[in-house]
Amino acid sequence: MKYTAFGLAAAAAATLAAGAATAQQSIVIGHSLSPDSHYGLGAQAFIDTLEELSGGEWTGEQAPAGQLGGERDMIEGLQIGSLDVVITSTGPLGNFVPEVFVLDLPFLFRDYDHARSVLDGEIGQELLAKIDENGLVGLAWSENGFRHVTNSQHPVETPEDLAGLKLRTMENRVHMEAFEDLGAAPTPMAFPELFPALQQGVVDGQENPVTVIVAAKFWEVQDYATLTGHVYSPVAILASPVLFDGLSEEEQGWFHEAAKASAAATRAEVNRLEEEGVQIMRDNGMEVVTEIDKDAFAAIAEPAYAIYTDEYGSEMVDRIREAE
Ligand code: EAX
Image (cartoon, rainbow, N blue to C red):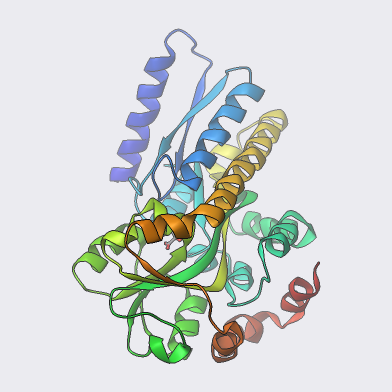
């Protein structure tokens, strides 16, 4: 209920701010991170583009930093229409659209170019269509980045170093299985609970891209990071069907364009932090291991593929692997 109340209050405030422009419509965009993060910049680009294309008829505001709950809560908000747009990692998305689990398989994407071209191409479109078939609206793929392990105990250099580490994962079966294979003790939890859990020692570590490590200042509670790059973390820009289905075709086109502009702004910030982030982490006292034997990690995490392939076969995995 509290989400609905907040959504209405935000919408009412925006309407008041709009004054006499009674035709103006306002959306709320939810995401997990700060307004100056890669998600925040993406949300702002969405709002700016929507405003521009609609000649000011549409505007919007951010509900950042998990104000409206974790990513699973926010997706549920889209289903009931208490939120309009959500920028979310695929962490909880497979629980709503199981075909999307393919994107969460460890060591699947080779690098950023590979991931971006798959998501911007035919495969990305097919998966957005699956999202639409499952009661949500998939506007575009955006990006979180390649995920890396951090922890409070010791440097991780080999898979054996993960043994026994209590590691927070997203609420994602594929990720949990992969870390179980790797010998860690995976503990799923929503992102808003993560920082306090690390602070209180409920878990020893977590895994997230450099973008999130920097945005969340995890160095305050984590001394060690390893650039495992164990999985690419895509972001879906989702809209509520409650809102979207009532829009004209022209308006729906604006939302699609706004989502594309959002993804571009977010990827630009990912690029910047891929260049500068490790230095920022080190400047803040983290010990960062940059060289590992990825094949050793990949071989051990391989059984996690069965969670997807047992249900859907390996065709999509092969198509992604073979994509340029
Ligand atoms: O979407 O839950 C997570 O670790 C995500 O990577 C984070 O919230 C950004």
